[in-house]
Amino acid sequence: MYTAGMSDTSSPEERADRRVADALPDHWADRVLPRALRPYARLMRLERPIGWWLLLIPCLWGLCLGQIALGGGLPSLWFAALFLVGAIIMRGAGCTLNDIADRNFDGLVERTRLRPIPSGQVSVRQAFAFLVLLCLLGLAVLLQFNWFTVLTGAASLVVVAIYPFMKRITYWPQAVLGLAFNWGALVGWTAVHGSLSAAPLLLYAGGIAWTLAYDTIYAHQDKEDDALIGLKSTALRFGGSTIWWLALFFFLALALVDAAIWLAGGSLIAHVGVAAAGMHAAWQLARFDHANSARCLELFRSNRIFGLIITLGLFLDSLIT
Image 1 (cartoon, one colour):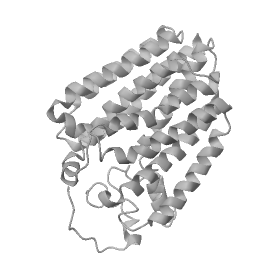
Image 2 (cartoon, helix red, strand yellow):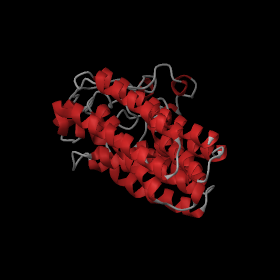
Image 3 (cartoon, one colour):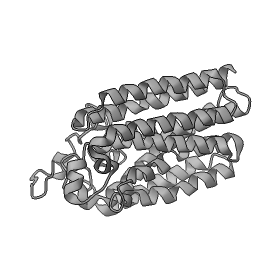
């Protein structure tokens, strides 16, 4: 709901006790952290873990596929742990940058008006300082890998930096988000191989198509507000024909990931994983309703399962083959 002109007389401290829209209820970040730290946890979206899951999963795809290409074996659990920590940190950094860039828009939208910056819990200067801290922590994680991986990971910052501004100039900001969120597929592969080839590039392209699907679903929650304040999205671009675009994006995602598996020498196990994820995609399409915001949020979050199904197939292929 568009909220221009609406006033909120509560204090920043009182707002810090409110749950932000679409956050998980009773999340530990809202219960356990001291009140002074909660706004920074919300800048990182800690109480909305689906974001770091969607950032982590392509890393695991690349890691497992890279191990398959080496002939199999247990993928590095150390690398997986680093990817987990890095995904949480860098998702937090990206969200902080996004909130800084969108601070003049978020206060006009019901779903985002209680975010830390527009609600007055965190100043822009404090958010910038927190962003620098997160980037330094992310760099410390990245430096644990080989230098090709370090350079590959650092290159993603260009896409991360421009994404928050894309919704102002194009109806396809979800494509740019896909470029950023799936960079981990390249990082995961290079952590194993120290180089790139066709297989990880196809995996990356499949991830981008997947993001176009799930983030278009997500964008349907805000399409009325976005239209009123002049922001753009694929949800606005596709409108009532969204279901057909989603089917196309899911098909491309599955086909490209499967092609990457084939190039890397994957076995039937990994291909079965892709087929099972295809069944999950079909379930999403059957339930999709562009006019139902709660359903859109539910389906968006369910993409963690879609991604983990593919991850499980790749992991088992690497472990058993």
